[in-house]
Structures are given as C-alpha cells and as structure tokens.
Amino acid sequence: MCGIVGYIGHREAYPVIVKGLKRLEYRGYDSAGIALINHGMKLYKKKGKVADLEESIVGKDVQGHIGIGHTRWATHGEPSDRNAHPHLSNDGSLSMIHNGIIENYALIKQDLIKKGYTFSSDTDTEVLLNFIQDIKQNNNSTLEEALRVALKRIVGAYCILLIDQNDPDTIIAARKGSPLVIGIGKGEHFLASDATPIIEYTKEVVYVNDYEIAIVKADEIILKNLGNEKQTPFITKLDMELATIEKGGYDHFMLKEIYEQPDTIFDCLRGRLLTHSGEIRMAGIDNNLETLCNAQRIVIVACGTSWHAGLIAEYIFEELCRIPVEVEYASEFRYRNPVINEGDVIIAISQSGETADTLVALESAKEKGAFIFGVVNAVGSSIARISHAGAYTHAGPEIGVASTKAFTGQLAVLTMMALKIAQAKGTITHERYSLLMKELEAIPEKVKEILADTSHIKAIAEKYKDAPDALFLGRGFNFPVALEGALKLKEISYIHAEGYPAAEMKHGPIALVTEELPVVFVATKDSYYEKIVSNVQEIKARKGMVIAVATNGDTVIPGMANDTMFVPDADELVAPLLSTIPLQLLSYYVGVAKGYNVDMPRNLAKSVTVE
Ligand code: AGP
Image 1: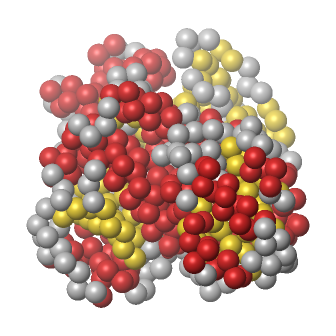
Image 2: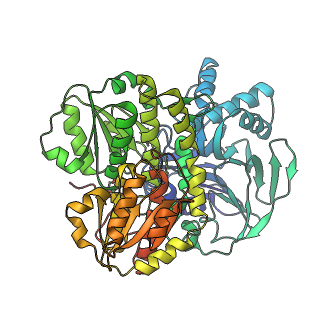
Image 3: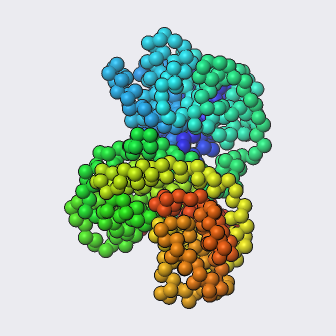
C-alpha cells in the first residue's frame, strides 16, 4: 500500500502535501516524492522517509498551488530514488503517482520500448504514464481521454493522480481497487489514499468509486465513469477523529491488519494463482524451477511467527513435493556450523526482511554454496536483496508488532510454491493440483466469513483473560498453528502459553492439566480428526477446560469443548490459513481486555535487527 496526497487551491501545495504524506507513512515508507507545477514541472523524490525527502529539498523551489505527493510501499522495483514516485513522462510534461499493481505492464513496456520510449525506473507506474502519453499523442486527444483509453487496456489495481504542466489548474485522478478520497474545501480540494491527510482541513469528502475518473480543479470536481458519463459526486461528512482514521477506524493496527487479511491474501494470490488456466505464475520460481525441483533438501530458516510458517511449509512441501525439509531457528542454525551441501535450497521467511538472526544465517549459508530463496514482505529489504530469488507476500506494511497478515501471506506464497514445484516434479496428480488451487483461491472469502462476526471470540477472551497459563494443542498441519497461537497469546497478553503436539501431552505435559488450565485445541476436520478427538477426551477426563477451533457443522468437538470458535471447512493443507484467524483474534481480545498496548507490547520490537 502506498500513500497518495494531492492538493489544488489557494494555499502553497508543498506544506499541505508533505504533512499529508507524513500522516500516511504507516501505509508505506521506503521512498517518497512530490511534483509541483509553478511555471513548469518541478519533481523531487528520494529513497527513505518523508523527512529524508524534506531534507533533500531544502533551499529548492517548492512554490506552487498544485501538486501531488507519494510515500511508497514498493511492489515493482526496489526502494530507490529512481523507483520513487512521482514519475515523469518521456516528454517531461506529465507527472503521475500510483498506488496499486498493473499486472500487464511488461507487455505494454515492451511495446513502448519498440516505439522508442525510455524508462528510468523498474516500476509499472512509469509504464502506465508513458502509455498515457503515447495514446494522447497518437490519438491527438485530451489527457482525460487518453487516460480513459489506457485504463480500459490495463489489468490490475490503481489509484492514480496525474498532472500536466500545460494545464496547471487540473489534477486528474482515477481509481480501481485502491482507495481515493477527495476533501472538499473552499476554493481548494485535497486528494488522498484515505482521510488522514484531509480531516484537519475539511470533513466533507467524496469517496471515488472503482472505474471512476475525477477531474479536480480548485473550485470544481467533475466525476465520470470510464464510459465518459458524468457521475454525481456523493459528499459525505467524516465523523471520525484523526487518531482513529490512521487505523482505518479500528482501535488498533493489529485488529486492522487481522481484518485486512481477506484483501492481503487476495493481493498475494493476484496475478499468480491462475485457476482458469491451471497456472501458478511466480517469476522467482519460474526462473529457478530446475534448481528448486532438483533440491536434495530444503532448509527453512526463520524466527518467531515466520518460523511457524516454515513448520507448516515443511508439512506442505514434504507431502506435495516429496523433498526432505528441515526447519531451523535462524539463531541456532547460524551458530551450529550446519552441514550445507551443494544443491541444498534455503528458504528464508521474514516479514521485515531485516531480522538479524535470519540475515546472518543466510550469509553463512550462501558462503557454503546454498541457493537462497526469500519469502519476504518488505520489498527491497536486506533479506530480499541477499536472496538469489524470492517471492513477496504483498501484505502491505505490518505495523502491529504481532505478525498476523504477513503470516497468512507467507502461507499463501509457500503453498503456491509447493504446488508449482510438485506439478513440475510430477509428484502431485492433476486432480489434487486443481483441487488445491481452488481451495487456495477460496481462502479470502472464507477468512471474510470468519471475520463477519467475532463477538463470540471476544466473549471467550474475556472469560479466560485472567488465566495464568494456557496450552495450545494441534496435530499435523494444525500443530504449528497451535505454536503460533501460543506465541500470539504470550506476546500480546503476557500470559504464559505453550504450544504442543496434541499426542505428545501423554508423555509428560498432561501433568499440568487442572480445572484452571485453559487448553486450546486446533481441531478442524482433517485426517487427524479422530485422533485429536481422543486427545480432547484425555484432557476432559482430567477436568481440563477446552477451548476449540472447530470446523463449521462439527458437533463432536464442540460437544466436548467448554467454548468453540468455528471456521469454514477446507482441505487440511490450506486449513492453517483459516484456523489461525480465531487465535489471532483471541490473543488480541485478551490483550485488550487486560488493558495492554496490543500494537506495541512490552519488551518487543517490530523488527529484531540485533542478533
Ligand atoms: C511475531 O508476532 C513476532 N513479532 C516475531 O516473532 C516475528 O515473527 C519475528 O521476530 C520474525 O520477524 P520477521 O518475520 O520480520 O523476520
């Protein structure tokens, strides 16, 4: 997600835009830029935060009453000055900022290069901008008409602001899939990705809809659809305060990020999981498929929640690809002088891409000749750069210290990766491959179904919030989910929680079970179901309190449990993407009930850049 701000009116645009970008930095902050029109186009952009941009502009000409600004969360092209937005068209007359992904940009770029266009960045945005210039020149049309033609030919999501130095009284905006809000002022208008930069100037806003184009002047907004038909702008009044808006109306970033998961999982699959053609398209894998298929061993290296994603990946890769997998805590792997053989594939999993334990582990593995594949959320991060290849999880900035949407993004990427390798190796039947593609495609809607009503989870959290300890148990694919649930509860509510393989309880830990100990079972319908029913009975026989995650429609587990959180049915291989959601919410609501700062828990940091 990127931050977008535009201004046109009687004020100096620069201070309005810079302040607005700072309010949007939670959306992405690897580079920033601004374009202004005042007797010609002036464009400044810089890798780093908005403050770095400001510092680089000191003493420069920043006058002008019209401008656009952008703070980037990279999707195409690593964070750098040249990849920062705004971009400039080849003829230097147009400047544009963009939030979203243009999926068919590569073909468009090839065509433009044949026509003699040059590109100074790796971004899809610069391709779209020159596509618009090309159409405008070839059709001898207005900028608005050229934009309309271009938008009908691209595939993907966008929120764009476009300015033309030959028309300094107009900002043209358009959106599909990425949000755009226009603030209505007196003789001025404010445009932004959300209301955060706008609310201090006006509470009257227009939310632009998908497939709409807005022609914005200081004293006029014209809204049209892609069919060039005028639309009536619907003005609403913001009734939120600034502080809550940065969280999109949620009380905490963690809750916002839990609720973003239907969209972030969809974004992770978008353009990659092509069920209609039966293809999984991931450049980092496509370009290294032979290496990955010939791997004698896969070693997964990660920390914390990412390590749990690695454990689930172990079950998935071994079942589908029949390649031996080892999952290592990065910190242990690093200092154990591990045996690394030529032909080993190391998969590094990291949300931040900056975790020192993981990064250092990779450096030593790379020195020993291993092939490094990075599954990372932060584009252009250190782990992404040190990897030979990789795949981004596209979950957007994860602000809450407890990892939620990045975790499900990791699972989505790893599942697609295993499916692609298994198909190439012939270790999966066509039927199972097709079934699992459809199962994965259905996950965003099933997550949405879980999130539709979470009041019962909140009630369960309040019921057990004073427990001194808790156990989380699961089997098979759900065993790592139990570990992850325990970590979430520990780091958010400070309750001592332990995850364990359910069958392992009888080898000692069952001695802990009393009437005061809540035992959370991740017990969805799968090939381990009958076994886990027995494990629940073992706990009940000792008067333990059971909280279950169960499959919709199941009556056996809920019949034994004290409390149950339901999830939709799904193939066991993708079920963790669902069974983890109630546990994220459980830890969140317990932490809130205990009055803790769930976004910044004590002693923790979002990215652990020390070993
Ligand atoms: C997860 O909720 C924690 N914040 C922590 O365990 C985290 O997963 C771990 O530090 C790894 O971080 P990374 O994914 O950015 O490498």
